[in-house]
Length: 308
Length: 49
Image (cartoon, rainbow over all chains, first blue to last red):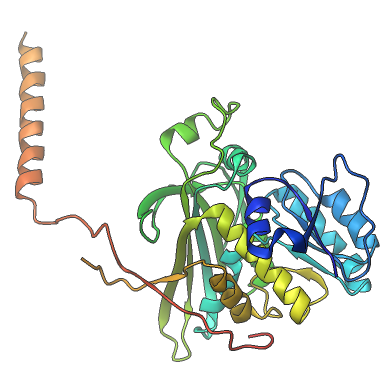
């Protein structure tokens, strides 16, 4: 089984460090000829932009695909390819970054403590490399889907301010609705949830300049990012419960750890065939989270007890 | 002139009230640190949860 890596950014670099350079076969789909894929191979797409055409081409060769899925329209188009991948006994992992990706896995882990999940709310802070920072910039002026009381609603990116508390050293940050495929992916994983929301941190300047081109080139890599996943629902005795988990790590390192965990799982046990969404019930969530922790990501739970 | 005096008086009273609330207020500030603890998730499930 060959693991092909498309991408040369922060996430691809971290993945090479985690898996070992000799374990990955890099290729650039924009320049190199299409690689000779075999059934059972895995292709990691750690690239910015839309991937639908490339994913379909890979799927026809019988290989599995792991994609970050940070584009709303592109992700919705990837759903159509589930049948192609399942017919080839291959997996199409949609959303294998920090969010989407780890956010869905944490939500599923927390939901195992509840009898019924009513709400899933995710907030994210930070970006990995320059491409990720550009997505963040655009997302604040895009359309943000939200699932409220069983209905889809579309909000303006940059609206809906909420002060979200992340693990240290990030702490409390204002977060806003932003264009992201995460609510749609979470709705597929948690169809019973009546409220699903996704927010991203932003400053006043981010919101003010969201509709303009980026005024200065983004950093080579953002600082420490963070993720907060809040799941609300009913316990077996009917009581309302809220559980919160999060992380505070470099976003590129988290995305690489999630992808590495998916590769390990594909190599060792094989994932479900067809469309694979982190957080879905047919995934070995705890095992994937364990792999992610083994790659150095520290998962934390909000206890509500302030420490000195 | 009278109107300007009223505006200045209103501003002074507002600043004085805000200052008193800030100095004497008992609400405090919410905690800004802590509340999180690391968790270790065991690989206990071989399949779906």
